[in-house]
Image 1 (tube, rainbow, N blue to C red):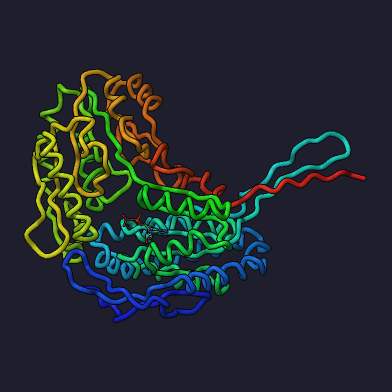
Image 2: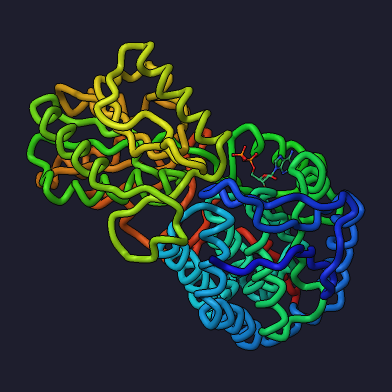
Length: 483
Ligand code: ADP
């Protein structure tokens, strides 16, 4: 077991401080045990953090640096993360419920963002625009200033890493609002900033309630850009608050993403996609493969294979089982688990069949059996609403057009997939599916390098990839009349 201190603080203007709203208990969802307490920020803490970040921005200390130097600082933050990966992975496993090996993937994945973006600090170049004789015209990209990062609990470190790294690379300053269920590992940002030699106030980290600290941050008049990952309902509120200050947002919201599996698909290979696509992080992944739309001729075979995979997983408290193998942790809370159970019960009421799973485990902690639901039809609630748990719905189709229609029949559009040996079918699907990223023959293909974001209610703006750097800069055009 990891040894937690009794209490963890927020990080404002280079100091570890108590919260104006008191403290919150942090629980291990894999055991139900209280791990520690964390400072809870109120609106005036948020204001102090924003003012510190604003002061650093206005001092020019980051913006006047030669970009390669800023990039080195960003990469040094990544190095700090790698140097301490085991410690943070253990804490993450206990506060979030994921197995230790998954937590290590997350922590190392977080470091990778700092390497990727840090390397690009000196590549954010403007353009020269010809205006005819007597003029010189060029563009420069300037940072917004104070950026707000409102973080979810499913990947508390990695979700912050992807926006913090890009925002710092481009010379912005940072206020992170961690999720109240998983705040402890977010101290990584204060320590990494110190290790990298960033000025005090450049990076601030707060835990606080969404409706209090989160709302105060999203609506703060000195915040110039907001990044939010979470639910559609909360994302809408964040965007409304930001809109009042005419501040741009990047919103990464939910998904109900579907894999279309054609009759010629390699189902041996697809087993791996099931394993990772819906059971990694106990299915608490916005881009999870939560629907599989399979040709009717292969439906029974696919369901049998999915059931076998679900039943092969060992489910339990993550920190006790460090081996890299078939293993799934708890969900983040009993409330989330019970919500998933409610959606499963609703599916059965509407005529679907639970092929395996569907129950809470009879042990302490927020565990849900790996669950496969078959005989799902497109209009059932389970086919429309995000479960955000280890629950895969299987639907079937007769022809390609129907498959595309079903894939597009939700309000979301985060990712989509197509599994076939036929390149024509695959490319038709890539055009037909309305989603921000399409996987052909491997769910989760891609990486830090590939842009990620949603169509429809899955949000707007892109994170990851080179494209994301442009979330954090605004274009300034300079037109010079030569005398
Ligand atoms: P969930 O409902 O799945 O817990 P949310 O989307 O509500 O997830 O939460 C994601 C993040 O948004 C968390 O850090 C949470 O504290 C924060 N949050 C919640 N409500 C608000 C709000 N009104 N304004 C800003 N942030 C919020």
